[in-house]
Length: 129
Image (cartoon, rainbow, N blue to C red; front, side, top):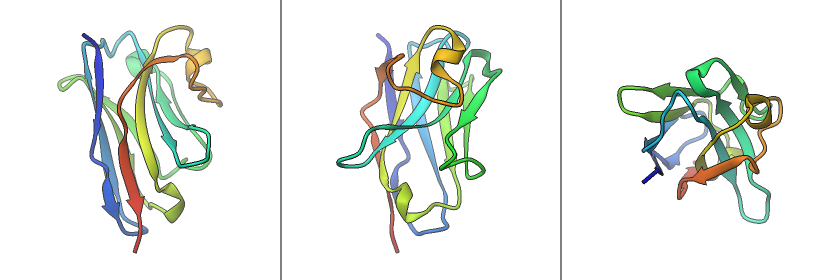
């Protein structure tokens, strides 16, 4: 059974850092494309970053570019999102997602949620002083 499970969320002060983890049980990291999304109440889910199979492509939303870094760990079959210089507006529930198909459809300037078929349960990140 394939399962995505996020962890690492929590409360952090502005300017601080967190690393989110996504345990990708039953997934082949060399086949699927993975992404991180976030959502706040009343807003649409926002695609933040994606990493294609074999990690040959990564993309970031403008809102997080230069502050967040996506990576994959083959030893632990996990996807990470390192978040630095956190801001109040980064407060949200963060989701890990996996999908298959042409990379441009899943991981490009736009990171649409439609092509992603597996989702984790989400982890809350709160940036507050």
